[in-house]
Length: 227
Image (tube, rainbow, N blue to C red):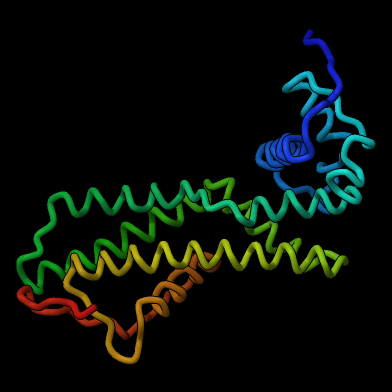
């Protein structure tokens, strides 16, 4: 059994230590209604079990957080700000296998490849999202951001979610732009690749829907896609 020792960390070190323990709990258990598994008592016990460092309420209240709800909001903000998306790698990995032997020499072969990309990418994305702990947590944070009774906490979490969504959408915009260039596709005016990315990203919440986007046009093999 490890030796218990009192916390003598700086304020920032203590904050990082407790936040990390809170994230570990929600990654293992998910978010319980009302964040009831994110109490100081529970998180302090997690820190002590992992590091042997004993933390008390006096160590953090008014030194790091004003109260427990303030700490819980910070954990939710950390999750909302998390840009790690392992499901993205799984989806792109499935597409990479398609392009390994792709025939891009004719309009017909590229049209078939577009269909394969949509089918394989959609299936891989749905599977990855269904198995993703990160995505499920992110959706839980969205739900809590709209239900919390504390306006300041709600605004903090919503700002973090908006930032995380913006980062994710930028990633997919650049990815779709690269795929379009490879496949010889362009968007019909007045559509933009950003609008296309927003449209497709929004569909992850409704995988059973049948989307239609009529702003895409195949170019001849010799054509170049305008910037």
